[in-house]
Image (cartoon, rainbow, N blue to C red; front, side):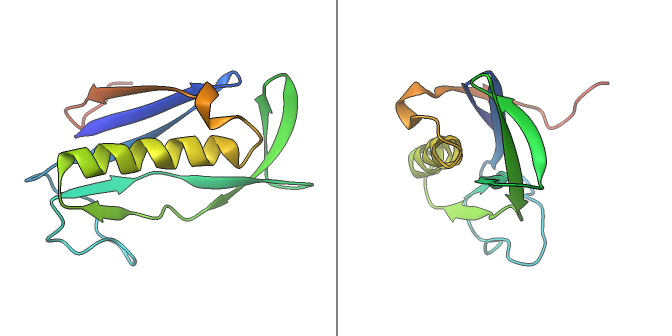
Length: 114
């Protein structure tokens, strides 16, 4: 699996790209299990009040989160481009220029230590 991380405005967003042969999460709305690549990441937008407060570019932003919207892709290239576009779009939804988002892709074994 790959972790696709975007950083901008003093904050970051990371999503997971499950590759061919890896078991992506299954839940209502998940892509067909036959999808070769599955992207899963939070979706959020700025609200006037309520939500979760996050410091972005030196200002407090109230974020409301939507259910993750998994997407299936046929090729690795399509999946990576879709993941990067998704991350840029989330930053744009809170007022950050998508061109200011620094992106990185990292291979993950699916396990984290705490």
